[in-house]
Image (cartoon, rainbow, N blue to C red):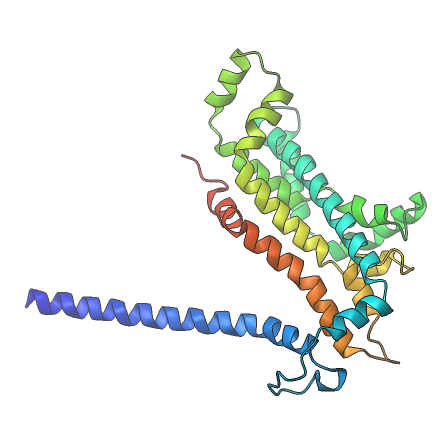
Length: 281
């Protein structure tokens, strides 16, 4: 009788696993289908982009070649890379230092400052967009790559992320470093930063992806093609007067593929960063 009960339990577990895997695989297929179809459509002739048929006889990279020849896509690519890299590097150092200071250094008003940062996280970016635009206008940074980068060098969420990780580092490590004669700055760069590899990689991926795909702010601040980032440039390929759907599909692949490569390279560190942030041993 006990063996029958065990068999029934195992059978229920097997059914539960089968249902779970079926739902997971189904969700994964639904999620990845738009990307697969977009890539397939980007290889088809202009007249066949919106035809939902499978025809592999006329696939080619002509849309990519035409896209690169008829539009300054490489200029848009370079602009996107510059903005994304500058903002990402700035976030790594500025937010890591801010998070470390909030976690390890006692100074007047620290708690108030931390609550202010938490409050900033609750404010939608659209609320501060107009004041930021007016400030950049006064500074002469409208329609410049600096204007696209400077407002995003600091992130309240990334500061919170780094603070939570630094709180989990045992203070005994830093105390031992102080006994060895290391200053606070050297402790930060030689001990804290190397230990924060996982959350820093998470910060890098989130920040780079967010700025690489950013559209609203670059579209407001950019008025010439020389300053367009890739998402803004692609938006000019389709308006009320003309449309190039085959080139839009090819451009979408130009925009998407780098993000997929970055994510697959760092996916393990990305998941470990979220799993370990804030956990104290």
